[in-house]
Image (cartoon, rainbow, N blue to C red):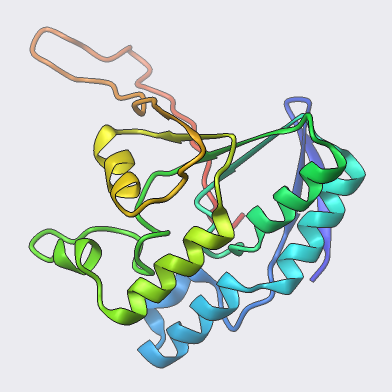
Length: 193
């Protein structure tokens, strides 16, 4: 459970594998009862908290950007808030791309919107804990007003500044042709390396 760091385009990147029963990337392989354990450990992962807190204390970043923390641990916001006590000038921006804080599944399924909008008691508990752990980052960014409205309705990020910044999309329409070499795209995610 070691961490290592590397530079990419002059940006210092820290990587570590958080302690859990299995990774979020192969969750579909496991029975529902074991998935519950993954979600509980993910929400209260002391290992993640300690690793991130140590990094933030040592590096004292001016800007902290988080995105889709499912699988890394919901204790990261707690570590960020603790580090801001030592470095009050640092800013925290959280980007939301899905509904992973509203429902453990992380997405709204067509025809089953009620699972997110009117959740069962366990999901309501999950949501309340996630809301408490995340608190209010300095700013929250969403790719659509729809996603932001879902979080506003669930009373997340009450003290945060909120922004909608659409994902960049290339529209291929009649009369538009791609460059001869095709398109090159890059993306970041919490996917395994």
